Length: 300
Image (tube, rainbow, N blue to C red):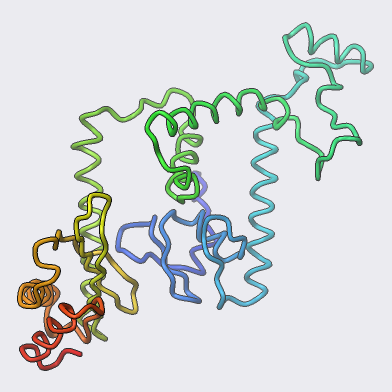
């Protein structure tokens, strides 16, 4: 008989925010949503602040439960990793330390002293065999990752992005022999899937807009080549989503044109769904807001 796969206990404390998408979850206590699946939700519920905000509504017993669970998961992972690099073959029995060392050296492995952290080293806890054995390998991997960032002038803040953790974790779980996505897959196959995923998420947000209503927000700023850019976002109890970005260089000081743009976006979101519109405080936007209120009587 095949044993049924155990259901992760995290699902007792969260739900999927988007149907058929187990990577974006909603906390049952605070209602906040996060991408990254149960991995990030565990840290959210355990209040570890590990690349995710801590839940402020879950009871202390739930916090303690997930802190213990995360600790046990980490210890189990270290045990599995150490088993891969066991310094002694199970079918050998050695009488003393010297025989163990000789056997390890003969098989290209290190002496036992290499696996011991001396008391004069300022390390908070005893390092595992796996951590010491793989230190050189980790440095090589991290150097390759860093070189990719440097050669493409990528922001160092990207390493704090939860999706970066998800990349590393998924590659680790896949194991040796992963074939990286091709140029065609990146610009076609997976791009189309991601667009479909975003559209599915947007559909869920749009459903929420029809219930308590939503706020349309416009945020103006100037880019590196002095273009006036206006971002449009929609806020509702379900969260804030980016709608679009428009180059307003030619109309940023023209109230009539700004009104026409705002009116078009309100129409797209649905006048019946929009409770209020928040804009910049410059004179042209203030006048555009007045014109919008004159046409759309229910808006504030």
